[in-house]
Length: 174
View 1 (cartoon, rainbow, N blue to C red):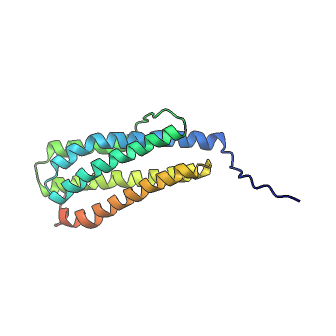
View 2 (view 1 turned 135 degrees about the horizontal axis):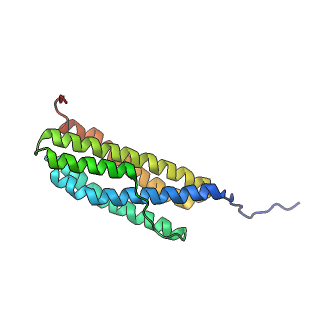
View 3 (view 1 turned 120 degrees about the vertical axis):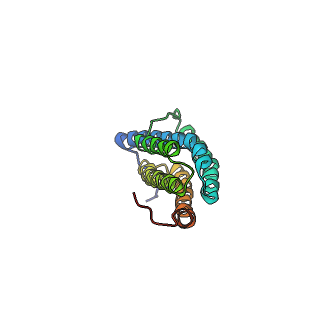
């Protein structure tokens, strides 16, 4: 008996594909929202390390947006933004911090806190997106998403291990 050497791909369930499409639009919206806010954040930072990391993150976020657009293209989908309420809320809070707090270490600490929350939210979103890509049988897309996820995790480590010790130097009383 001859065995078939053909590769059989798992047919994704319509719900899985639909969820993946909704989630990639959501992540795309989060990145587009965040990229607009980053220049204000790094200009408002008084810590040189924080400003530098945020400026670097702006360039990396542009790359993430391009990669998501590549994924839309690969999947023959229109690159559509689904606004992410969680990121929009964090951006709004951050803009309020910039407006109401003077150039102080406390402002840097609050900026850093919101940036870390946004970063963690995006890490979790990319993890979910990677799992969904695998679930619909798109290992090529999952690999692209995994690369972005690794970059996000590296940024998170830099924020918490390098920048945070400099910015959060004393306990603050709120």
